[in-house]
Image 1 (cartoon, rainbow, N blue to C red):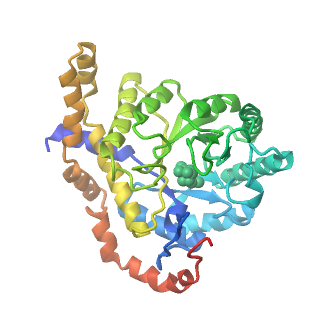
Image 2: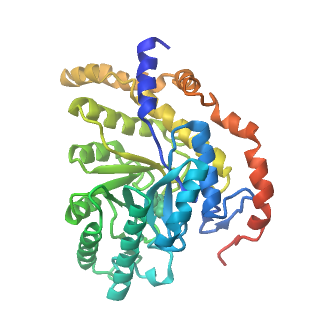
Image 3: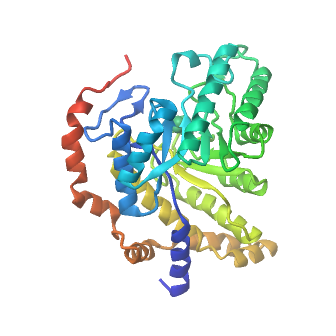
Length: 396
Ligand code: AFD
Ligand code: MN
Ligand code: MN
């Protein structure tokens, strides 16, 4: 690895941070049931402990996204305890993700519910999430709505758009000046005929209607097969409306597979578009990188370490693209030159430079191996196996 490239990689790794999801350490499953893991976190404190391990070993995951109210059962009253966990385990609360999809009253939707009292309840939940975020000094309130319908004719899609605009504007009014509202889109699931915020255009229009502190959140699993996600990223960057990502990978739908496990080149191209924008604009894109995965079969902590190290590799590869040469090749329609600048960067083995960087930071060169040697998994398995043994294993 010649010096300029590893210097580029070192500089990039200095800036790259990615947020862990609290829900990624707890037992989750599919609609066909859960396979309980004896070491899975069963409390918010255990989630902070596990996230703290991933950050301790990788050095790039200082924040953990919280699901409200899963992680804050007593709402704002839970924040003191959360702050104690943060200082005890060395990770701070990150984005706040209100849960507007599980309670029975959300059966026909939250902001899109025809019953105004349910819409009001959903709005109160979001206002509480904003208050929790303020108490925890969290900048981002990350909004995903499962709202939609399963059959043609059962929903007035224009009326629901208006209800979302009103509620998001009112939610936006609760934000303090340094907070952001990230509006996440998803084409389908759990609704299968229409989803109220189904694509990036709808999320963009609703973010614009909500107010200047609202941006779009791109979940890489929330696109139809073969959709060009990096083009969406380029457009949102150009509009200054890209707030952040939920990273995962997918084969068929919102599979929440490990980032880069199916199509690493797509993630590389997303990172490349961001770097190309930064080079061209001369400004840092203010984007929150988050993981949205919760593995049912892989070990929870191992799969998070695997995701983080993959993210670092793909980010490091993307910074090797020579933007100046690329711009010239594009201008001259030198297609093979332009294409090869991306392919060469993607083909570069950046692992030695990343290991050097970790070593320079006093971090383990191989965080996965360090975790396996640490005895942490054996300890938490002993401590949690009994609690997990009594967990629900099916939905019937
Ligand atoms: C599910 C949804 C969406 C949301 C996440 C966390 O599809 O991605 O961001 O849960 O609430 O994956
Ligand atoms: Mn998501
Ligand atoms: Mn999802």
